[in-house]
Each structure stands twice: as C-alpha cells, then as structure tokens.
Amino acid sequence: MHEMSLALAVVDQVEEAARERGAGSVASVRLSVGELAGVVPQALAFCFELACAGTLLEGAELTAETVPARAHCVPCDREWAVGMPPDLCCPGCGTPAQDLLSGRELRIAEVHWGDPADPADPPGTPGSAADSHHPVLEES
Image (tube, rainbow, N blue to C red; front, side, top):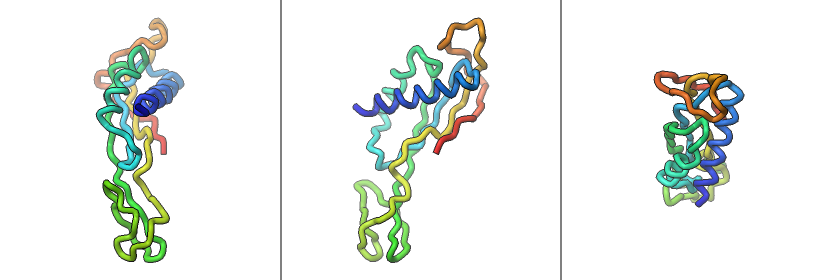
C-alpha cells in the first residue's frame, strides 16, 4: 500500500519543519491530492494516523482536499475537466491532451502548529494543540 509510504513522508517533512520552528506539536495537516494521484483517501487517513504515533503529529487532524484533474488542448486552446475515468482527448477537436494542468499533485498545503516546545519535555512529546492555529508551511 503506497499510502503508508506517502503518510510516512508527510509526517517526516512536517515533523522536521515543526522542530525547525520550535513547535511542540502539530494540530492539523491539510493536503492537496490530485484526483489522478492514485491515492485512496480512507487508506491515507488510516496510514497517517499510524504514522503519527509517537511523533510531534500524534493526534493531528488530517484533511485531504481533492484537486480536480484539468487538461489543455494546444491546437484549439481549450481547457477541460478530465474526470474519472480520465478523458484525455479534447472534447472540442479530439486531440490527445498535451498538457495536464492539475490532478497529479500530492502536496502539503497547510500545517497548523500546536504549542511551542517546552524545553523540559523530551523530544517528540506532544503538547496541547487547543486553540493554537498557526499556518506556516505551504509547499507547491
């Protein structure tokens, strides 16, 4: 299941960024997931919860927003929603899509940090994330 490797990669990247910023915990993570990325949202959520155990992200909420797949036809300069299953031929002229504009991405869109790290806490000790929302990590 590749969702576990994706979840582990997200946790690693967010945990590294949290440590760099002195965050004691992570309250939530929002991902942008393209509809053609081949990710099963329920499997990703399950794997994310497992991957967070024992890290600064333990208890963090995961939100995965689907990014619709869109393509562009160069000859007739038309853009269309590819859909699922994907229709990769231009609905106007039938030319195969040369540009897939969106739909394959998987990126960390936003992270809300929890409380600042307490120097007395051992590394990886989750802090209280209540009422602290600080979006600071955005990747494209």
